[in-house]
View 1 (cartoon, rainbow, N blue to C red):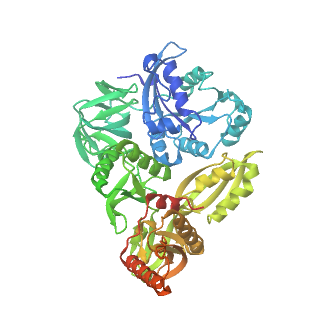
View 2: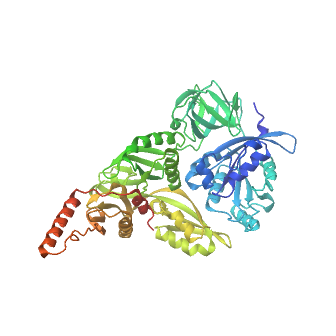
View 3: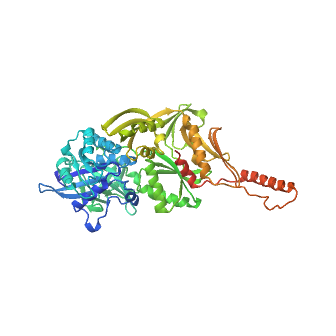
Length: 599
């Protein structure tokens, strides 16, 4: 049983690409947690995609031993968190497992939207904040300016802010000392009944689910019978341990400690992030606050390019689901695309990560349909339904109103781009809710915007108009009624389900015109003409035509009566007409990607 006064639980939070993983590397080196021969950069990011893109996708944990100035040995439990807004729920759960947070800001880029969001999340959990300005070794670093931004956010004093370079190690040792001095030890009692929080999980092929936990009260040890409160299922613990960062088995974990347990849990959905574990015979201990199920924000259809790969895609999804509890899927079929899956994701980055993993790890080429979100439909008979697929929309005669999800978005950008950002948000049907200058050069702008308006390319457009210096964070604020219609795309009068999407009526014509123009360039010529139409119901609002390949059937004629030429042309015309009725339009995967890149 560990002395709680010698334990510190903390996490590192930051906007994406502000040096969070590099700072964690220096902590591990200074505390000799990993032998130098086994060390590598971004050691806690074990996925190739994480290392290549420089982002953390999954939360990680590691235990470090640190000798304090008072001569005592302290256990420092670090929980590394994702930096992208798509994985905000994992950040929330990680914060719930800690008493303090190291808030990292890039000395060149300054305070960004995710910085502010993470700060407020940490303050809501009553965590001790240790502010760190990183990358002071860069030529364009402005640590003093960033310190002033920090002060305007939380009123932090200059002497409380650490200025470091995680790359060179300058100033990092002082942060470890501050963690011991400033962050309070965990509260809890080992002699109480077991109460522990699951803040993450992974899957081991041979031993089942590995649940990452923070023990708040009591003790969990090998052989205990435990119960997961949200699913009300009982299991016997087969192993407990802590992270170094590999799994190190131990006899037990007691109050205040961070570690893992295995209990032959076969489905990762049974060990839900945010759930509470108690002893099986304990019916009195309550769940820890803050648990909520993870709800996908973006939905899209995934179809294999080669029809014979459907079985391989099914197997790949089953394996991906084991290590990604936020990813959901169910089978669906399309007349145009064949058999595939309707998939739910936390955001577009999450969707892109899954698509990239399918390509790299399973060698599968995928067609991704137009991303959608959840809409709430109020029907004439009083029934309220939610749909995530535009093709499930009832007929207009049945619909009383369509409600779309709204977000509150916080944008931080250079003050000189204020006007451009306001125009961008207004073009996306945003409602201004105010702004605040963080300093003379940076401003935070608040808007309420429909989710469908930012789901595709809002992030890219934001980076474009701010020369890469803008950032945004969002939170869901409910559903609101809108004048929405379903826009269908037809090829030779045949509906292509993968191209259908729901759009605001005022934007329907412009979006329809964009899509048919893009498809005209993306779909190759056939031996017959192809009509591409955008339609609302039976009303066509935009059209383009791909002309047929033209073969000169009269080239072999060298003379004679003109009727010979007319006969051949009429025969060709009849053949094209017959082919148009029987022919099938081949829609390449690039056509679906072209639609996603509409401006």
